[in-house]
Every structure is written in structure tokens, then in C-alpha cells.
Image (cartoon, rainbow, N blue to C red; front, side, top):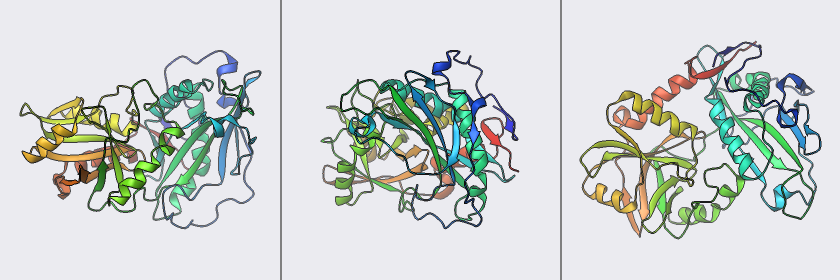
Length: 385
């Protein structure tokens, strides 16, 4: 991990894959500049993921010829066959990471190799081809470096959201392993992910909906995991809540909060002060922010930090006995979000309210932001011309 100022940088000490058919080669990258480059400050995005930058990265793959040369080109619509299997069978995946602008007016990518590794795992789950993670990340770095001025032209948005996407382009109605695919990356300005979280996020919990099951693909970032959650999300809103608290199993294990990993800070059943989050057992997405929270709080050594199963019965008992200190969610889009209450079995379970700097989530947020915006040793720094 190191500083970048227009130079090629290796960010992973792992050996490169030598089979050219499996490798994205950043050295072959070509750039076609858009005729309409950004000339003035863009309008503030009204919501997350609505204002996109000038360029995109595309890399094509075929079983016969392997990976083609990476291209940065003007942002455009895609053209796919109507029988494309990514549309019919959801053979596709995506990732999400941010480039943060520091006080020195440089952008930093926060632990990007974790995103690349998760993307590779997702690709294997839907039989899309493997790729060299560090080579792809170098291509993404070049794209962000080209688009970095977008992060400094709007007072309302000082960092960029990066969305790598990988789709099958196989033109058949037969369900089969793809023989052609497209990997592309787009960049957008960061607006507010939730409409209002000033008092914390409200959740609706009902065991009739399940986000993922063991043996499935809940630990991969596949589009189908998200589209299938919309019916539950709509029902949560009818109950006056913003997101779903996903439960699993007969004992109603707490798994995720909306599209976030979830954390419970409490005095546990043994009287021990603990920060707990569900374990990565195949139904939990391994979030980058989640891992960072675990790393930071374990380094503090001030309380127990656990990856363990949590149930609604345990939470209800802890709330009744006033053992809950705080609940919060974490993710790339929202980073860390305080949870205010849960509607469960027709009752409103109120969680401890916001209390400024005394909140654990506030303290964690400050430390994570210091890493994201300023620390050169954990983030990946891009020079600015």
C-alpha cells in the first residue's frame, strides 16, 4: 500500500496469475477522452447514485480469446442481446467502494483489495471468469485518477462512489456457464443514501422474509440478492420503517439491517461489555466497513469484540433489562448508521437514543474517517494534477 502520483503501483504482494487468458492486463489499458469534459460544478445529487462522471472502464472477455484490452472511454449506454443471460438468469454481480478526498486535496481508496477479493469470490459463485485482482485495481485507479476533479467541484459531495460491475453477455435462453462477459466500472457523486437518519434508522423485523440461507449466495454481492428484497422493503415502509431487519431460522437470528451489516453494543448475558456482530457463516455479506470496525475495536482492547449469533429473544431480553448500549449498521454507502427502533411482533422496540460524542458508533466513525481521508498507510492515495 503506497502513495500514487501518476505512477504504476502494485498493491498486493500475492503472485500474479500467469495464464494470459485469465488476466486483466493494466499495461494494455487505452484511454479515449470524452469530447464533453466537466467544465463546471455539477448539481448536488438529490439521491445516491444519480450523477455520473464522464468516463467508464470496460473490459470484455470471451472463453475463446480470454480477456481483451481494458479501455477507458466516454460514459455511454450498454448494448446487449435481448437473450443476454445476465438479464434472464441474473448471471451478474457488482461491487461498491469510495474514493475519499483528504485535506491535502487527494483522493484515497479505502482498503480496495478487500473489494477486489470479494468481487472475485462473487464471480466464482456465478461461474464468471477469474481475473487478476491487482491488475483490475490498477485499471480502476487510472479511471478514478482521470475523474478525480469531480470530487472537488461540488461543495455538497467531496468523494466518489465506484461501482465495478460484471455481467454475462451470453446470448442464449439456455442456462449455462457463460462464454462471453463484460466487466465495467462507472463512477458517481455521493449523495445521501438514506432520506433521513438524523434520529437514527428505523427497522421492521418479521421472520416471514429471509434475505439468504445457508448454502446459498448471501455472502456474495449479486444483484439478485437485492432485487428480491424489495417486497419486504415495501412492507417495512407500510409499517413506518425505513429498512428491514433480516431474521433467519427458527430462533430468529439477527443477520443484516437492510443492506448493512449490523452491530450490537451491549452488556451480554454473562455481564460482559461486548460489541457483537453476526458471524460470516455464508448468509452474511463480508463488508469492508464491518471488517474495519472489528479491526479497530479489537485494537482498542477496551471491551469484548465478538462474531457470534444474536437472536431477537436475546435482544428483547437485553432491552427489557436495559443492557443495550447501542445498535448500528455499517456499509460502504452509509458507512455507519445509528439504529433508532425496531418494529417486531406489532411492538416498537426503542433502542438507546443518539447522544453525540458518547456513542460508540460516533467514536468509530471518527477513527474510520481519519483513515479514509488522511491515513497514507491503510488507504490507497491518488495524486492530483
